Amino acid sequence: MNFRTVLKANGPAIVLTGAGISEESGIPTFRAESALWEKYNPEECCTVEALHKDPDKVFALVHEMREHCEKAEPNEAHKILTQLQQEGLVEHIITQNVDGLHQKAGSKDVLEIHGNLGVTFDDNMMVRPNLILFGDPLPPIFDVATELARNCSMMIVVGTSGMVEPAATIPWIAGMRGIPIVEINPEPAGFSGPNLTIAEKASVGLRKFLE
Ligand code: NAD
Image (cartoon, rainbow, N blue to C red; front, side, top):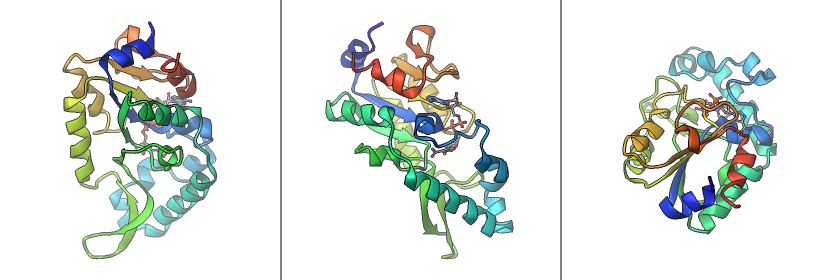
């Protein structure tokens, strides 16, 4: 299978990324063992309930993540996506990541469907993290992402476990229309058929679109 030929024939593609694409930049995924996730269990800390009960802990997590992410650099996978955008072969990048590495790599049209590590205001004008926490309503940008999935002609899914809803529905929405879905993940979640699955790290998998 020549993936560049598939992309040229069916693209431009929409890309969905998850924490796995930033693993090679040294940012641990939720599923990886790491001191950060041991200290702050995401299922406990990244919730609206936690923000109300123990806001200091949620802000402490955001602060530590921000420190970590600010030091991190985009890896080859982020850079290849930027290159493919510049070639017109990739359009929007829908990301679940909050690390800002796609933008740091020079990518445009990045949809941060889970927010980012900045701050915003809630309905009562209280400062809160600009993350979409478990229990938050979906942000309007999610509708844009869904619309892209409904209309794109190809999708590339990189480094997501498919365990966080509703982001996990995005490839299914696209796939229902019979378009090519390419999944890149050393432990694929099953978003694509066997011929379009690249069971490799993000950088190795995305390199195939340059060959
Ligand atoms: P996840 O942690 O649930 O899953 C990560 C996936 O990446 C796994 O399927 C794993 O097999 C794969 N993976 C690991 N190393 C990889 C590599 N080098 N290349 C390609 N794939 C690799 O992540 P998720 O599906 O994105 O969902 C978890 C949530 O965690 C998201 O909502 C996201 O906002 C948040 N999160 C973000 C960051 C970040 O911003 N970098 C980091 C951790 C968690």
